[in-house]
Length: 293
Ligand SMILES: [Zn+2]
Image (cartoon, rainbow, N blue to C red; front, top):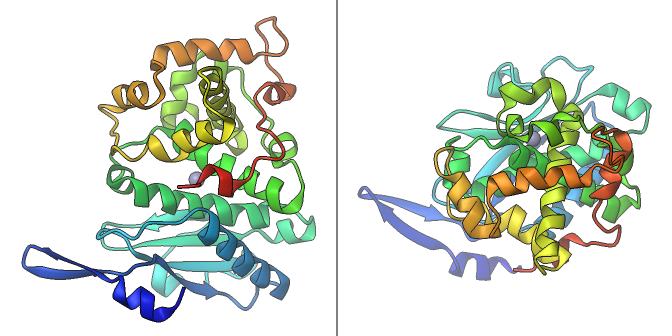
């Protein structure tokens, strides 16, 4: 977009007597450490451009820019003065500032793991979720299976679309039986952290919700748009999200949790790694057709 148009589109808000200027576009400030391979760095910019094109982050008065800090794990916390001890991959920070941390494990380069790229889409999607919903930005809603299941589904769809590799099947396939027998534990990190390797169980639940919505005659793209976007727009909280869920999806949470047992391929009350097959999205689904508006 031409710079002149961006400047004209500047939105000026007044709040508490203080002028807040919200830019027309969300901005990421990149801090890419020189220890990262140059081909990763160029792929990083390609991925960020693709995501910006397909999943537009809306600048808000509470969040319209973010610093990204990326480095290879063999370098010991090169950005400590800016981000302290933050490591791994996260949207971290505090009430004053949030930043994206991408510490890429050295082993992911040695083994050519897709995760060195998919993690970018995962963290990007969390920023998108924050732009949709201030309650999510403020940590007023946890709902891990929708939040992490959503970010992990997006990272898998990104890899499927751009690398022709079924990341769902090969990297997110460790579904725990608890996702069928006791799904409410996936509403919090604390209750489910040891039963959600690579967030596979959260992804299973999220993909099953897309199948249930398709049974209600929504297209696959529409179903995912409702899950990734529409659900977050009314600012759900830990206290009211079940009502929000019913209003947006026209399915009650207990009925949805009940329906999960129908996605057990073994049909014998057991679940195994093949069970993600019963909920996999189409391999030809495109992000631009999900986030069409
Ligand atoms: Zn995440």
